[in-house]
Amino acid sequence: MSTFIRSATLPTTDELFDEILKARQRVYKAGQPTPLQKLDARKGENVFIKREDLSPIHAYKWRGAYYRMSLLSEAELEQGIVCASAGNHAQGVALAARKLGTKATIYMPLSTPLMKQESVRAIGGDSVEVLLQGDSYDQASTTALQYSQDASKTFIHPYDDLAVMAGQGTLADEIVMSGEGDFDIAYLQIGGGGMAAGVACWLKRYYPNIEIVGVEGVDQASMAAAVETGEPVELDYLDVFCDGTAVRKVGNLSSYLCGQLIDRFMTVTNEEVCAAIQLLWESHRLVPEPAGAMGLAAWMKERETTGPKKALTIICGSNMDFGQLSWIVRHAGIGSAHRKYYRFHIEEKPGSLLHLLDTFLDSVNIIEFQHGIVGESKATPVIGIDATPQEIELLEQQLRKVGVDFEDATSDEDVEFRIIHYDASLINHPYFIKIEFPERAGALHDFLQNSCKNASIVYFNYYYTGERVGRALIGFDFENENARIDFKDSIHCQDTILRAVHEVAESTIKRIV
Image 1 (cartoon, one colour):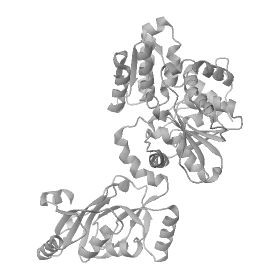
Image 2 (cartoon, rainbow, N blue to C red; image 1 turned 30 degrees about the vertical axis):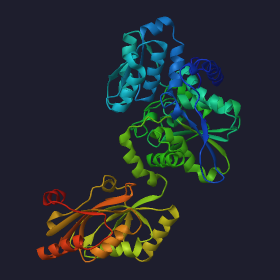
Image 3 (cartoon, helix red, strand yellow; image 1 turned 45 degrees about the horizontal axis):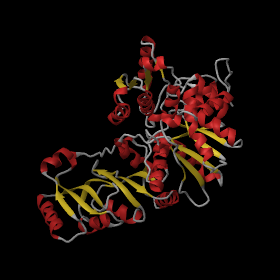
């Protein structure tokens, strides 16, 4: 329960509700209602997603920005407005500035992806000026606030403003009007808390028994900290993977209202968010930005215990930089407990690696392989697998039973960044090939069994990319040059399952080893 003491300057939840009523009359001059859809989930699960990614700016922020700016006087609009944003709020302000005929000066961090900068300019046209300032939203915001005061321009806050909250709350009115209620539980992601406060206020009025869960990133929980202590507190460290909710210190108004309206808080990891993005892709061909999937990630975290509860989540945006996709794909399986990386300790000798695959890993789906020679007697290959949590547990039990030496390497930095250790001084007569093979169970194994059984594998680099073919870079070493030549000839002469075998140039081998 909140420890906030309300001052005369802080509005009540009733006042926020009344403001949302007023906002309904204005926001739809800037955009149309977004759909509420049922998620294709397991049998017996009943969860709905509010598709704010289908809004005019692919995020909900247009609502609050437009409503707040529509309340400005002609003189204030003539003077121009100022805001600071890392992305979505900037686009909302840009849209409102163009529609209301005002000029917006928008400060964004220097690290803002070019895609988001260009989106703001494309939406606002001649109505916006984008200025890059500082390495974080906080630095950009400080500069923007100072400029707004010096130039006597209105500052449009992204969340700590009653009108902004009210505008965001209109999405909850659309949920109620959809006729899909009553809802038992709603998972609302929280950055600054503007959307969470507005949506929770409206939902609680129409669904009195609903439980509102505030969802924050593990290293973004500034709202929970504020509610617990009774005042906004600044986080020492702020994770920015979910950049749409990366707020180091929440506002006085938003934290006070969230303290009244949020029933409990929970956190989700970046990996859990990635798993939620994967579920949305598989069920709706939808790719939200990380913050947009946080509510669903929280539901997934509790799905085994929520039972038949009718749940609601908000897909609050889909303005993601394309470069994030690779990280998301790699970590989605970890977040859903379907992917794990193991570091094995085996003998460094011909056939030992293949023996490990043959004997213990033949029944699991290998999605990554990292190996380099590091010693004359011991090898430490890293193998990533994709399986159900039950299959993973059974595999570990079997490995322990037969005495295979292994450790969980999922969180190790060298595995995360794919650093393949090797000792070049241990390689005498190397032969490296790049292979392409059908991406099916057993294909790579068959090649190793048929062609490489007696060869010493000193380097192995493979990871699953989702294509119909797999690609791997494999390095072999031989006792003498004749053995190397014989192996090379056999590889190219025999009919293998490989679609392509490419010899790696000597110059490339030297760079690798």
